[in-house]
Structure formats: C-alpha cells, structure tokens
Length: 214
Ligand code: G3P
Image 1 (cartoon, rainbow, N blue to C red):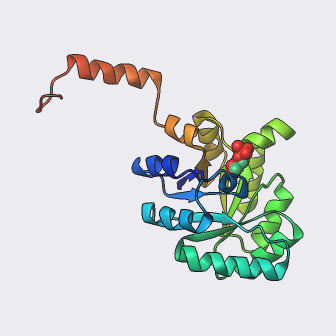
Image 2: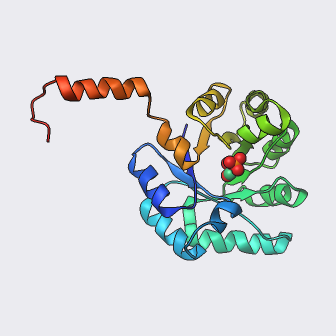
C-alpha cells in the first residue's frame, strides 16, 4: 500500500514528502494548470524531492501524438513515470499499447465496467474518484468495493482518489483500495486527532524524559 500526494504545488509536495510516509506524487491537467512553474522545471524539481512514482496525465488527442507525448515524458521522468489516461476509447487503446513498457493508470473511473476494461488493457493502476462518485452517484465506497472485487488477482491496483477526509480515505482502504492519493489538507489531517493533541500536551507539560525540553 502507498499513500501519494495529489498536487502540483511544490511547497505542499515538499512538506508532504518530508513527513516520511508519502511515497509519490499524482498530478492531473487541472492541478498542473495551477502550478507557477513551467512543466519541465516542475518535473526536475519533483525528481529532486522524491524518487517514487510521479503520475502524469497525457493531454494529446490523437494516438500518434499521445505516444510521442508519452515518450517525451518518459525522457523527463524516466523510471518514475506513471502515465495517467482518461477513460476514453483513445485512453484505453493507449493503455493497451503502453502498459507493457510504462506503468499506466486510467483515471476518473466511475464504473466497474471501466475497471474491467482497464484490467484487460493491462493497467498497473486504476484511479477511482470516490468523493465525486458519492456526490454524483450516491456511494463511492460501494464502487470501490465492486472494483476491488473485479481487480482481485490481477496486476491492476486500485488507487482511490478524490478523497476529502481521513475517514473517507480510511474507509476507501477498508473497502479494498490498494493505494490512496490525497490532497494536501486531507494528507496533513491523516495523522491528527484532537484527543491525541490533548495527550501530547499532557506529556509535554507534566512528563519528564532523559533530556530537558527546549
Ligand atoms: O486528481 C484529482 C482527483 O483526485 C479528483 O479530485 O477533488 O477534483 O474530486 P477532486
């Protein structure tokens, strides 16, 4: 299981990676559009911060230009590249074509049928939009459960995305997600609990240890 940060904001990404338990970075075209950095400079910076997977979504709209974009991105990100693909006829065709050479992740998945197709197309990951599915269709966690059953014993791993709270992230994992990608605020909230804060405060104010606290 890995937890990734879903962001293209360098400050957020640096803070998240410094936590020590975040294993990589997922991006999408909308997140990249918010970055102040030019894309190649951003990739260089991300590789300096992190040696785990970096997910990049192809934006070309033809087969040939998408293959060229995939190779261009591979030159920049090398072994760290995971290619995200929209769940369109073109996206799944590209997944079939590329997944034996570059890990692929069909994204914005809303149905078990799309998961079956991704599995057949050799995807290494599959990004399911949990919170959006709950908001738009009723039950994103049931969708995770169904897709996890479809992907059982396959090489395709379920990446739960669009997660808005630590509870939702945890429930997605319990429902069968293999990996989670979290926006910065949810990620930072994962390790926090008000009762833990109280306990820590008491350790600090009433406890003693080998060294004097600053
Ligand atoms: O990568 C973005 C995906 O996680 C969707 O998130 O917050 O737009 O529903 P959101």
